[in-house]
Length: 326
Image 1 (cartoon, one colour):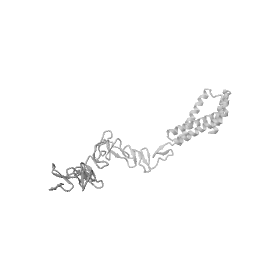
Image 2 (tube, helix red, strand yellow; image 1 turned 30 degrees about the vertical axis):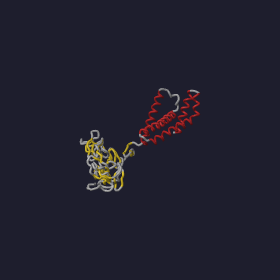
Image 3 (cartoon, rainbow, N blue to C red; image 1 turned 90 degrees about the vertical axis):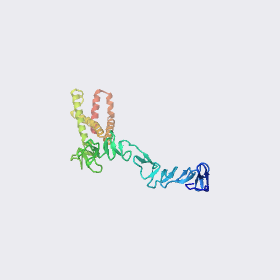
Image 4 (cartoon, rainbow, N blue to C red; image 1 turned 135 degrees about the vertical axis):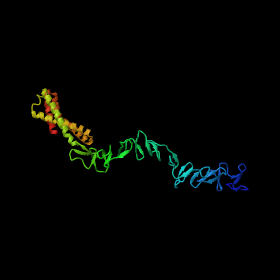
């Protein structure tokens, strides 16, 4: 019994004549643990079928099965906490990684790696679709602040010190400046300030030419000239010759309509420059101006019901009221 020879079996055991061993005197499916028969052995003990007893596991095993050194779990508060092939070890071997239960599981190399080192994403070489290798990982395009190595080695080269991102070597290939450097981008170079020109503003860390305020007057002038040219052509066709008798009234009308269209073009310009707030402000003022114009000219609309000549008188009245409003 338990590797010792007895003339008669010890207490709480009975002889097994076929096996010539003493077994625990416990009901079927139970095992002797100390002086008690139990169906489940305590922690760090296993069921020894030979003697029908609970036997202690090896000191490195938290639990075991069949034999003392066939571990099924390990103590996680020791250095030998990873289970690999029923043995508790310090670190999982190559091509194995511990899971949440500290059991070493085999792994295969994962994309974007073509071959791996110490883990499934510890790249040693890269696949064709992600060819650029940087810091043990593969990229389709090198991360900032690095650029694709033009030598054909498919590596990543660090940008110039001032660049946050770049397209090549040197200080004149920057696409942005390093965050926190206080530098601004101008012509792909990072510098302390924009050129000495009032037409430059800083947009998203870069010097941009042509602020919104500088573009509006030009649009207004173009619109005014275009409308003035249109009226000149129409006047040559005698469409308005009999109606705008006073030259001063004609000039005021052209200026007013030009200013009105200038505001419309201003809104378009703000939309192109992505100035949403200013665009909304100018759009509301344009709507307000139309509303006020309708209110101011409401009494004049009755003249439309009289004669065509009164329509011209109405146009002149609206024109002068627009002049006052603008």
